[in-house]
Length: 351
Image (cartoon, rainbow, N blue to C red; front, top):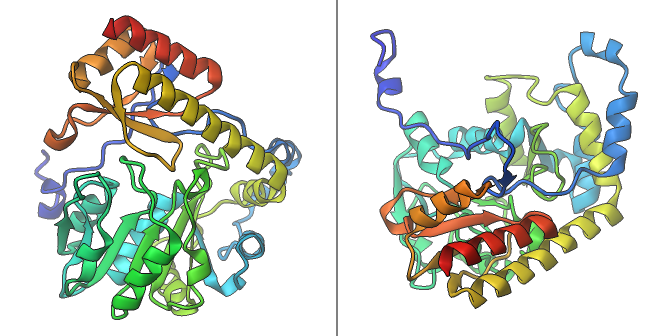
């Protein structure tokens, strides 16, 4: 630690992202899409005039917000965009959750949530998952300064139907409910249609997973105008230009090819279900998933041993070194060939 750090920085435990290896591995550890972005994205990048880079981007990213509004059937004024959904979440924590009452979140969910709380001095209380590794929505009924959860949840993969979340919103009207839908396109049910009924609902999404744009960093939020305005106030007090000109154009191009989007996510879902069956045949417990990953464990083998065995065979998955999760692996869904290689490697390890 440095003597120049502020006390708040000394006390931080930063979020640890999934490894981005330099060596050539089958990479199934960070839930990236195994397929390239829509063809229109590549064409947009080729055609982008370099001379435009001397100019600042539109600080409101209006054209992109209009495209997102059309995609999700909301008004442009109900859409916010940022430099990845992580940034959008960070701005939301500052805008809505610095309250006298605690923020409620699942005890096992996206591990960036408690990091934001520490960074922004947000008091929070964790809610345990139920005995089937699901987020128990009824446990959020206590007095709170906000609620945040991923739906479907990460890393466990379970998603609640829209009306179950509507029931939660009917009970919780005095604080913001943030639903993080990073993985919703792989089998979940989006809560975006509920924003017209519930002014305290904020839904976040990302282009990193189902749109294959993790390398460009683009996220968004949809909610009532008053919530979007709160995000804008924080953004404009931090960075007025979070989304660059190239990313704006690429995001629009990604939204324009619905057929490609549908085909890619269906391929991921089909491969996921094939992989589930193969792993269950090998004796793995595989949690139900509405995401582009599987959360699995084997009663006869420790998670760390399986992780190391796969790494030795050139396959990288995610292992969480936490007591409750230490026997689990989170396995991103890759191409059919990559998942076949995974199954063959696990067959060799587990025989």
